[in-house]
Structure formats: structure tokens, C-alpha cells
Image 1 (tube, helix red, strand yellow):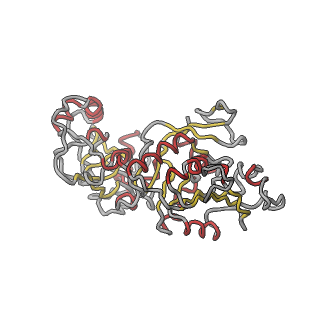
Image 2 (cartoon, one colour):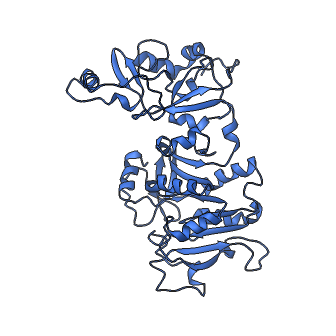
Image 3 (cartoon, helix red, strand yellow):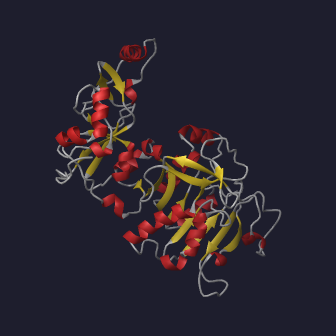
Length: 399
């Protein structure tokens, strides 16, 4: 499977042209419709850089056009993508086809009605509406114009451009459902949207990896690649999440918690970590934040009303009625929560104590705990606080 290192290499090479599986799109979109049956009704949906010949997003929304009550579906292609380089039936069968414009220009496809008089609206009614002036880059003026026309933007943008793509959406104040790497939660431009409940994780992907088809030219030199039953190349990518500002039911589900005492007695995973790392059973307090370290979401205590540092995977179970996100443990003290800034000498001493050689341990980059007499950084943590008292599960006696 593709890990973060492989993703980083793909981003560096701009080789992150991943095609989302139809089943993953279906599972996610159905959740919004179940929560609000009219979520897509009378809406114009833009699918940027999603050529209908290759994009399952276009196929899915075209197939569900009537069920969702859509007003209009707009799909564009990016001329430099592998799929767009190939001629499609949508394009070749149109009187607007121009072999001179095909290779270098993006394409525009629309769906609004039953064009073939079959009695239903589906993929056969997608219309090739012509070539774009440019290559179809989402930053171009013509795609911006389509963005401004749309009500909702849905796609799987290149991971290498996630920050820029999200900013492009937010700039226009649009609703969206997009795919990205989970680490995007910690981006300086993304986290403020999360902490102010202007963006949250989607419904359907919360663990494991996801399968994405890739172009035939994609170098399959990472673990987790393969060829599917249709002869198409695919890779498996870990840490994938949906990001959205459209409501769904899961973000209102209450996270059932246990008390500090119960967690320390019965949460075996927590006990093992605390005994191994700290030699005692208690939640450690950060040395540089007024907060306790909670290494697992299922170990959040119900009877602690102070600030807690939790893993970014907490966002999979975040309920805005139950918790307040107040900041993140990071280097620059952007949220004015640090209680201590380590000096250069302190970082050098910590490095020597940990590794037995000279160097500098960047203690200011995250939360720090004292572990068997040494300063230790923890993984990236969100800083949260409970809102409404005790959410303990009195009937739960063991994990």
C-alpha cells in the first residue's frame, strides 16, 4: 500500500492523478442524501478536472441526476491529464470536435436534460459543450467562472494541490466535498477552518486504505499496486479522508467516554502505553502546554474538564456539540497556548539525553512530556476541551 513517503514522492513529481472508485463515491454521497434528502436538489454541481470518460464522479452524478433532483452537472477535463489526452466517444461524436484543439485544450461537458428522449437522464445525455480556451486548470479564469456558477464542488483534487484547491473553493464561499490526505488537518490554512467548524471530515472513510485507479503510465513501484479485473492499474493509499462543509449524521453522533479511573483500569491499550513509556498509570501533563496527553481517542476521559491533546484521528469522531477544538500543538504558537518555549541549549540537551550524541531536538514543534526523566515530543496533537459535562458510558465495564 502507498504510505506517506510514497505520497510525498508522488506530490514532488506531480504524479498524483488518482481516480476514485465508484463505490467510495456512492458510499459518501448517499450519507448526505440520507441526512438531508434535498441536499443536491436544484443544485448545479461542478466536477473540475473530471473527464466523464474516466471520472467516476461524473458517471455517479449523471446516473443519479433524477434521483437527486439536480439542476445541472458540469464536468471539465484537464488537457495535461492522461485521460484527457485520449479521445472519448463524448468528444468524437460531437459536431464540435476539432482535432487541432483536442490535445492542448481542456473540455467542457454538461448535463441538464434527457437529450436522447430515452425517458431518463443518465450518462448517455452528457453533452460535449466544446473546448475551453485554456488547458482546464482550475485556476484559470474560465474554470473560476464555472466555479462561481456552481452551488457545490465535488472532486478528488491532486494531493499536491490540496491547499491551493481548497483555498480556491473557500474564496468563492462554495459548498464542497473533496478528497485529501488526513495530514491536511494540520495545514496552517486548513486547521482554522476546522476549529471554526467551517470544514470537517466526511462520513465514510475513517481507517485503512483506499484503492485508486491510476493512468497506464503511472510507475507502479510502490507496495499495494496491482491490476484490477478490467485490466486497469490501481494503487492503495493510506490516510485518505473526505473533507466537506456539508452536514451529515456521523458528526452529530455522541462519542461515549469513560472516566479517568475506568480508562486507567480497563483500557488495555492505554495501560500498556503508560506503563511502558512513563512507568506509572496517569495521564501525563505536557511540559509546554496546560493540557494532558491523551494518546488514543477511545481514552478521552469523561470527567476531565481541562484541555487535552488528542491524535488528529480524533476528527473521525468529532462532534461539535460535544467538543471544542481550541488549537493545535505546533511550532509557531499560532494559537497562543504554549506555556514554555525551549531554548537552543535545552533542545541540545534533550537531543543528547535521547540519542547520546550532539544535535538539536526540536521540542517546540509539538507537545512535550517527561518520559522516564527525558523530554519527549509526542506526535501531532489537536488541543480540545469538552463542552457539556459527563458523557460517560455507565454500562461499559471493559474495552
